[in-house]
Image (cartoon, rainbow, N blue to C red; front, top):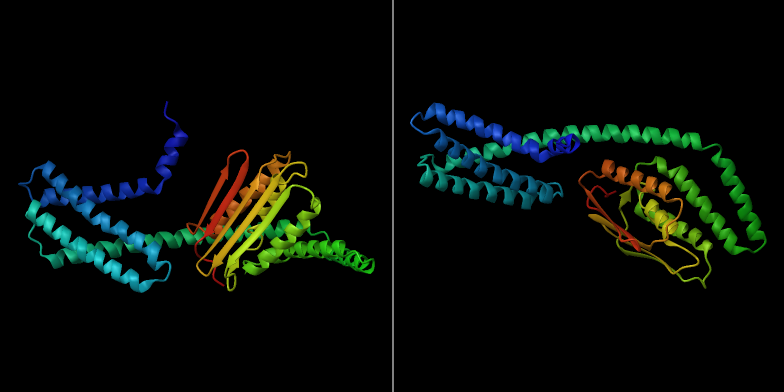
Amino acid sequence: MINTKTLKNFFATRWVYHLTFWWIITLFIFFIVRSTFHDKSPLLSLCFSVNLIALIATPVYIHFYLLEIFFNRKRYTIYSIMVLLTVVTFSYIDYIYFFRVYEVKNNYFQWFADVLFVFIITTAIKFIKNGFTQKIMMQEITSRQLRMELDLLKSQINPHFLFNTLNNLFSMAIEKNDTTLAKSLSNLSNLMRYSIYDIKENTVPLTKEVDQIQRFIELQKLRFDEKDDIHVAFNISGNLENINIPPMLLIPFIENAFKHGISVSQCSNVEIDLFANISSVDFSVTNTIHRSENAGSSRIGLINVKRRLELLYPDKHTLRIEDDGKIYSIQLKIISGIES
C-alpha cells in the first residue's frame, strides 16, 4: 500500500517543482521543434529538446549557487565576474555542441543572448518567490511576537514588586557581608530583567547575551561544591563587538545542558564554546547526560528555539544535535543576518 504521507512529502519538496518546471519547458520546446522541422523524427526532436534544456538548466543552477555564495554576502565584484564567465562558457558549449551534433547554425552571440535571457527570467522568478516567502515569514514572525508579548503580559503579575524584593534582599545581604548571596541575588535580578524586558526587543548586542549566560552559569554553580567532580567551562573567542542576535537565543541550550548534564553524585561536564565575527557566530554546547524526569519540558524549550531559528534565520543557519546516550552536544552556526 502506498504511504500517502510519504508521497505528499515527496511532492512537497522543491526539487519536484523544479523537475516539473523543466519538463514542461522541455515539452514546449519539443512541440516547437516538431511544428518547425517536420522532417525530424519524434525521437530526434525529443533528444534535441532534452539536451537543450539540460545545457540551459545547468548554468541556471550554477547561477543560483553564485547568488548564495557571493551575491547574498555582498561580494558583488566576484559575483559579476563569475556570472559573466558562466554565461560565456556555456554559450560556447551550447554553440559547439548543437552545431556539431544537430547542425544548428545559430552563431555564438545568439546562444549568448539565449543563455543570458534564461538567466534573467529564472533569476526574476527566484527573487519573486523569495519575496513572497520572506513576506510570509515576516507575517509569521510578527504574529509569533504578538503571541509571545501576550503570554509575557499574562505572566508578569507584578515584575516591579519582584525586582524591589530582590533589591531589598540584596541590601540585606550586603549589610550582613554575605557577598556570595548578594552576587547571586544580583545575577538573578539581572536575568529576570533580561527575560522579561529585553525579550521584547528584536535583537540585543551579543555581548549582552554573553553577560546573561555568565550570570546564568554563576547561579547554576550554586548547586554544587568545589569538591564535586563537576567541570564547567565557557570559552569565548573572536570579536563579539557590533554583532546583534535575538535575546534568549543561546541560553536555552545552556539551560538544557545544566538540567541534564549535572549530577552532584556523578562525574559531570558542561563545555560551552562561542566564536564570533562580523560574518558568523559559532556556538556549541557539550555535556554529559544524566536523564531526569523533566526531560519533556526541556524538549519543549529546544523545540521552541529551533522554531525561532527557522523563522529568524531561514537558510542562514545550521543546527546539529548529537546524542549517543552518554554525551549530548549541539553545534549552531549562524552565517548571516547578525550584523548590527
